[in-house]
Length: 537
View (cartoon, rainbow, N blue to C red):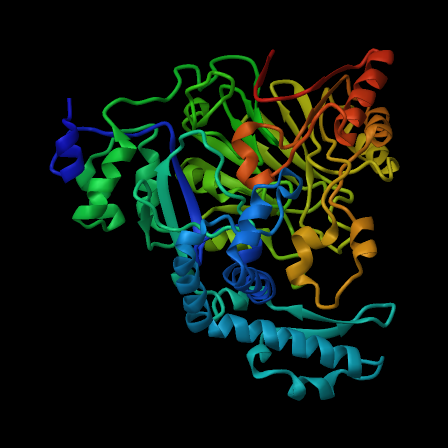
């Protein structure tokens, strides 16, 4: 057995494994990474109009921010959760951003200037004279166009932006620690500062050493290999020791030997398995295996054929889970974006830049798996009426079952689901999201809005899925035998990403109960999922 002193000093050749409750937080300029602060255009805009002003606001009055953080009514607000005693660290972070990210801040200013030029000068006539007037930062990276309603817009040549100075991997780092069950600060508002129990590594998200580290969940490695793979010094190797153990923690029943199995891992994550294949949807998985009330990383199979991403919101494409699984995933299936639309960055380009193998799909494209297939199906609404195409529901067929993965798709026009049924036939099980009173437009998209909207307008355009009537209409049109409500963000380990609070009087819960009663009256089996659930056949 390896001695802890040997592990810490990095001199043992004995096999070690990653502890079950090891977590990674991928960071961009110390903020928790998600697509809109990694993709070059969206990252520049969010940096300039959201993150920098938020840090400036905190430094002007830290007490206001901390008081807001302590107020349950303001949960999920843009308030920096850093004690005032560490405000100098926030000041240093802000100074570094202003100094080192001048190109990105300049890109944001150039986009604002170009948008104003288009508003003033694109009046239905030839756009050619506007190109010489564009800011230099945009030269070669955009195209101006009218739609068929004669409305002008600017489209970004997104693949080039990932090769430009505006995509800077030096912004990326990771913070490794152990999950102690305490809710982490809200990801959209609070940068991650260094601490005595965290190992900070200035490496990009596609660093191969991370794959070596996270493979150690299922196969042994050595401290020496990890030290070399991650480029650690003595002090970092000593910190790494807290993340390692000499015993594997993978569950013995993580693989399937016959039939089919579905496990609910919380929020929108489902693991669909047969002996031949595994499909995982929107992986967002706990690492804390102490409670027995959830499936964790320990319960995942060794190999995952496909990961299905339904859309780009921060609770459905979760890097802290995806990076850990990268070396075990055959491919990530993502919906194709509209190419160059400011509010619709390419999920495919984003994940490819982070080292993933990606398959992009359009509606009704099919992706084969051993013994079955995945079919992309349309996703309606939930994006505050923005023109976002990178969203998809799915039908998964395996082991003789047909399963509809509905995520947050809305029932605002149930006839859509009639078309899905006519094209694909009935489904056996439908997983539906019912966050029917979601956050307003500006909560998630304010950094991307090139013209201000009124509060009344923003509040009318919510990030909402189906209410009871809409969910019932989806079920009628799909002809499904069973309905399961999921993707509500209720599980305790998701608070740092979801920041949701429900009780029995909350509108969403009342709507779920109304839908369950509707199903019961029609002989449809239905459940409101929470924490964990398993189905086998």
